[in-house]
Length: 149
Image (cartoon, rainbow, N blue to C red):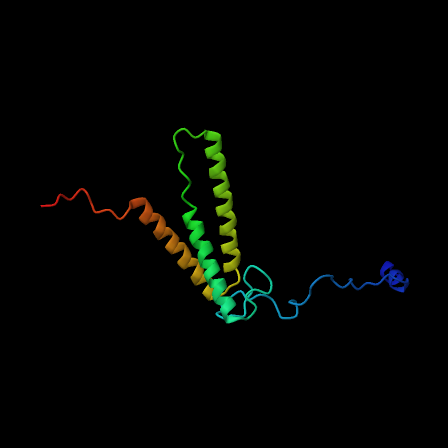
């Protein structure tokens, strides 16, 4: 007789694993899709959001769009002002960088929902944010190198 047989005959000693504890509500629906889908029935960042509601889905799209814009706008570090202590300036830049990285991870997690609308909102947000940064850095001033005749 083997050890397994001995253990199976003992009270309280079963060879079947114990049932997992916690919220198992979403485990019977199947695994997450690994292909892009387009539906309002998606979970973005938080369980139960947008909860298969079209207005909440539109809000989720707008939220991801704004997160992506913020990531790009914050990618330009604050400038070091003359007279400011180097330590304070470095601390400020580190704080902005940390916040931007956290927002970028949130955008990445939202895109990992494999929802086409969320992906488009994230890409459009990054594009608009990049455009805003480029316009601000170059300005919309006329070309001064061309003399007016």
